[in-house]
Every structure is written in C-alpha cells, then in structure tokens.
Amino acid sequence: MELSGIRVCIHELKVEDAYFFANWGAHQNPLFYDYNYQHHGVMGYRRWFESRNHMFQHYFGIYLEERFIGFIGIKKINPLTKNSELGLVIDPNFTNRGIGLETMGLFLEHYFFKLKMKTMTLKVTKYNKDAIKLYRKLGFRFIGESRTLLEIKTSDLMHPEVQKYAFYLHRDCFGRIWEEVWKMKISKEDFEKRGKNEVSIGSVNH
Image 1 (cartoon, rainbow, N blue to C red):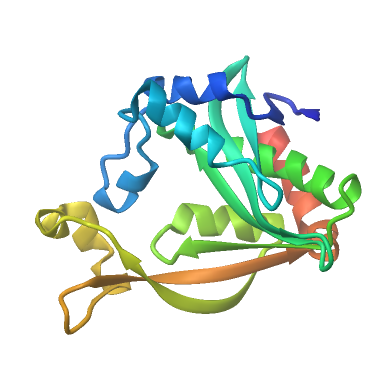
Image 2 (tube, rainbow, N blue to C red):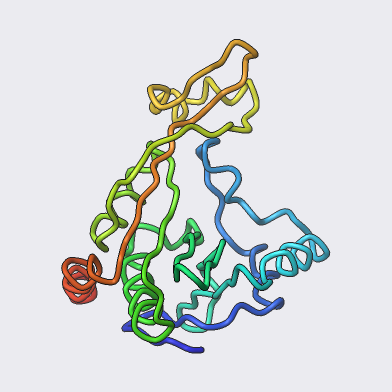
C-alpha cells in the first residue's frame, strides 16, 4: 500500500524506518516524554518494530520528501465489527504544519473506502488540545471519558508545562497520578459529512 498526498506519503512501515527515530526532535513537556524515541538504540528500535506488527494491529510510516516523520497504527483490529483503534505519532520537528490533517485525510479515505472498515476509535489525553482539535476536524466524536495511570517522575510534576495542565491530573490515596482521557469515534458517514471537506480545505491552506 502506498498513499500520496500534496506533501506526504504513507506506506508500510519498514524496520529501517525505526532507526530514523534517532533524528527526531524531542518533546520538552514531561507529559509527552513517552513520545520521545531518540535514545532506544539499534536493538531497541528493532524490538519496537517487531512488537508493532501482528494479526490484530498494523503500522504505517508517514514520509515527507522520503524522510520518515511519523507513523500511524491501527490496533485491536476486529474483522467482525470492522473497527480498530488509532495511534498517531509525528516527529515534534514537524508538528503544527497541517501534516496531521493531510495524513489522516489520506489514511481515512483508504481505511473506509478501500479496506471497507466501518468505524475507528481512539483515546487522547484531555490536555492534548491540538490532537483533539485535529480529530474533531476529521469528524471524530466524543463518546466517553476515563482515567489512566500516568508514569511521571515526581520532580517533573512541578514543571511549568505540567502545572499548566494540572487540572486534568489527579492524585490518588497511594500517591499515583491519573490523567483524564477522552475516547473518540468516527464512522464512514462521519468522515463523509465533515472530515473529507475539512481535509480538502486544510490541504489548500497548508
């Protein structure tokens, strides 16, 4: 599979792509440290790749001028209900450029009309406002809320970026920190009503 847009291409993720994580930018906000992949080492990158592709999940690379700048994962693939769960990660060096909108527009077209899937769900932390804005543009709807355990160093809790979003973090009686998470969902019909139009506008504007 290969999908081509105005700027980006999407195709099957290869093990060599994972080695390019070493060139990615780094998130400075401790809340997003889990998305920093630079220091895994060669064997770590290989293990990461090998753990990502099996029967019920599949990963695709995002490329800008042949440079690996992100990946899309569809997880928990259910062939009966034709649903999966989305994972999307973009190199911090390339965020806020409309790349996420173009990428997901391309991919959702393929997902719904070529793969014949019916719905897609995702989970996003409530403080990740940029991601929520993107998903809403594409046609994703809020369907539920939960809390997940946040792995964060105690010293990082006083970081200014963490303090800015402290309203969405909760400490339990054991001292563990939990973060608020939204669950969102999109159907083929949702994408046709809203997402396709937003993607075409976004492609022109960006």
